Figure 1 (cartoon, rainbow, N blue to C red):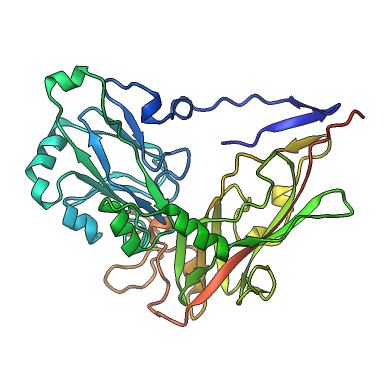
Figure 2 (cartoon, rainbow, N blue to C red; figure 1 turned 135 degrees about the vertical axis):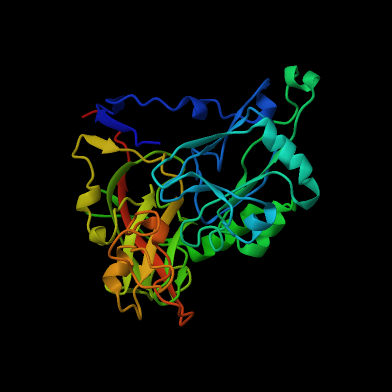
Length: 393
């Protein structure tokens, strides 16, 4: 969602831009609140929230029928249909079919009668249709894979109200073993992860400054990288603004730090040199920033001049970090540019790869084979905000 930009006039908030939500967002109510007949569209990862990305554990989608559609909304990813459940579990893209590439979002897949027949034939060995992302290690390390169970309803069921409406559920930030339990149907309390993450992500109390704004400093949870390691995954951030009301956003700056913070504080860490950790890009709304060029700079995210303001309330608490650890990396330029490698020699290409490309997110994988020493990086982000005036001028 976009920020709601409003003008504060005489203690009232007068909209200057009216924003319309997409129809699919307006229609997203629980299955208990709506009656559904016929075919439905399923937003993978509830597209308005996280969509199709790495770092997300996707629950298999069940009760899908021929004619239903799956919408994949994504950023630097692709969509492959895997040839079997074994290929999905092992992230083996042999005989897989590339359905959509980077830049083809959103991609809509329509479930067919043949899908239902294939699912029934392969049922003992994990029937269904299976999808994964082939970019980097998104499938293996990033858990970016999805199974969809397809059934062929009877003629009577086709005209009756659907008893079960398929939905795409997910968890954020869980490990491989916990994800496997969740995908097998075991109830994994996402709150446990949120509680653990809250212990590793913290914010100071808001302090009123001389500029009339409240100031807050925060630390994200750790992102652990090996020398030459690449991470492009979603993370839960500590929300730095009040949750009981909307406020006017002031300045927002950020940087990455390392070290062991003093528990419950943002102290005890040091800024990471930009020639050690390269920030390829950031996605999300807690903090806005393009990449390394935005470190410790407020200009790319300058507040609107009075009496205008950008209001909180639409950001969510999810951010995606695409960061590259440059320790022990000799060919650092090729690494940060995500150059493709020759599949035979492993050297970086100066000309197009097998699919005609020289580089891109699909080639953004670890730049060394080193497994240690690892280092924890955290984002330190500083924000300011002010309350909406409620007095007459």
